[in-house]
Length: 214
Image (tube, helix red, strand yellow):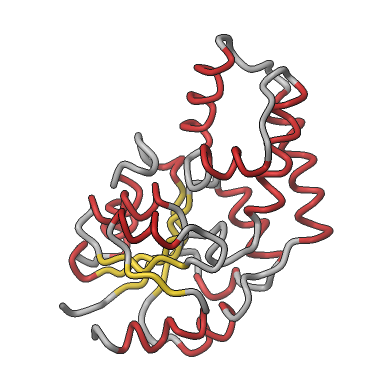
């Protein structure tokens, strides 16, 4: 196996946004009559595209979300990002050491990805090589986003390694025919392994793991 591209998920892998985003989602869902804890939000929605989350929410709610729901939640979430968001510990040092081409393939939309990477000083590492689930028909756990990213980067799927932190993201990468490293510092390692990832818990381990399969 020859690795020619490293594909990073964004939320939970590059930026520590999952705690903020899922607290906000749980808060806003509870406010509209769908009681949701932070832990439940992580379990149900982590790693999924916005469209996929909306589909799940509306099915459980039994009716469409109010037109203002997403805008209101996003405004509050982005405000919290501006106050509290940090890069994942050690990821900047990893990006500085990597010699392989890199890109981002995230379930978030471009506004969110650009904001979070910009706030954490990571945007410049990706030189416009940023791909969103908004660009494909189906988000994770379907393989479409990762296949789209590899195609745009001109690299065959079997020559890509994906760095993910969610079971749905790992599933998507495996279905795309890519090797997956599951970042398990704040995720259930066993769930990532069950979906087909090789796990690690410290970002500093990633360079060695990549060197071992070059």
